[in-house]
Length: 136
Image: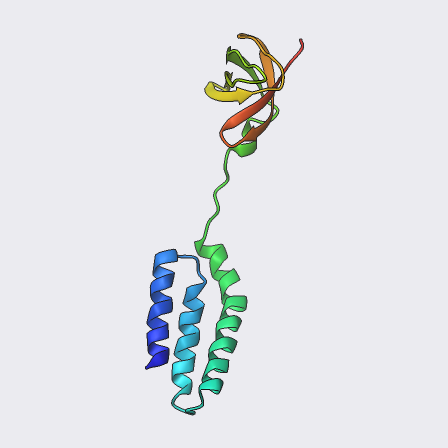
């Protein structure tokens, strides 16, 4: 009964988290449950659980992860290196605004940059652009 309960617990955890981790422990629990037909020794059952769980994690998870868990590309690096125009003055102590590719961003710089000056995007910190003035 213990291994069946563990199967259900790991299955519920997998349904909640959807990370393709707990499911392998669920299958390991099923193999341990099956081993109760052959032995009453809890140590052997635990070894069966650990061996099958780890084997399934190491063999099956990478295969299924590439099929079912998709990572999406972000636009993080899209703006780095681009030239924009300051729409709200930037100082070393206050954020300003910059328009890059038609999008307004909050921006900061370690130097004062006036409205309508051109800037180059150096980096992104959170949702703020780090910029420097571009000398024509």
